[in-house]
Amino acid sequence: MSLNLDYFREFTVLSDTLNYWEAADRLYLNQSTLSKHIIALEKEIGYPLFTRSTRHVSLTAYGQALLPYARSISQAQVDYSAELCRVFDRDNGVLTIGCIPAMPQYRLTELILDFDREYSGSYRTKVAEGDTSDLTKDLISRTCELAFVRDLTSKQNETSSFDEQFVRIPYVTDRLVAVMSVRHRLAGETSLSLKDLKNEHFCFIKENSSLYDLSRRLCLDAGFMPDIVFDSHRIDSILEMVTNSDCVALLPGRHATFPYSTAPSDGVPFAAIPLEPEVCTSVSLCYMKDIPHSDASRAFVDFFRKRMGDEAKKAEIPNGTESPQ
Image 1: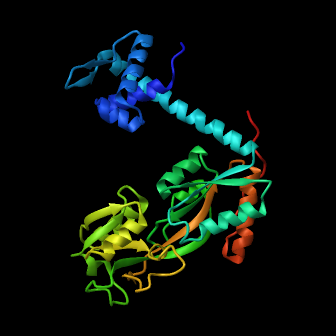
Image 2: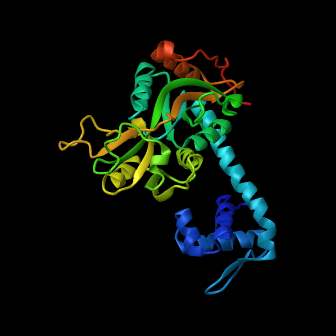
Image 3: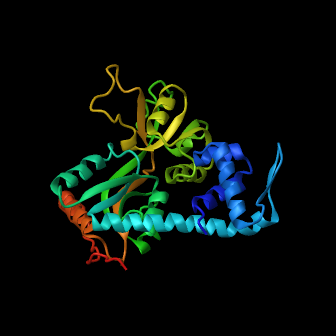
């Protein structure tokens, strides 16, 4: 069968939306192209997959029967493409490192560029930015070998199941702060409890992110449901919102800094007030346990240990470079 496997992914997206315009938009295609691909798939399969009218699109019984297999084919295509890229990168000294957002605030950009300069000609890095939960999945799937992730455990002595799968080398600890306009009635406080904020409007990091879940849980533990009026994956958007409204954001302290070398000439327009009792999060360099790693990965871990000195806990990384099967 000489069918383009991408057609199965397009079929699953159309099955999810049952709308050609929305499916085409998700797939970055025009509707005419998507329609031609679906017709080609139906012709190759030999059965009608959709019933169509001017107002309605629905799966036929044949489409419903094909759907789970199409999803499997689409996922397999993603998986083998990722695996081939991983093998290519490994064989060519390319190391993919996952990083949480706010790289400048944590000086991760500087760290990675210093590694690139020191190992120029031997290895080079690619950076994939994402939330901790996404980066964890990337480590498991081997999409990246190393990742700087955030430990969001609010209880300092709580054992995380994360450590059962991953090696964690501590990098930096950050304290959660309440961020608000300098004009806010609480802006002059030296510390705040969550209970002090229960009647406030909140700006949170994007819903379904780890920081969103942590902030919401902390508010619930303090006895109230937060009134979230804005959420965004962009730190600058959150800082702009709190600066120009009466909203409060809960952020790691280093996020509440300007990413530039100097603040505005008229002063920083927001206040960052530590929470009491203290809530700390830590950023660590992490990788999967008990699997072989590439030479580039082990070189970066060695570089990182030397850079961190006594601050980095000793951790063993498995020896040996994987060979193609």
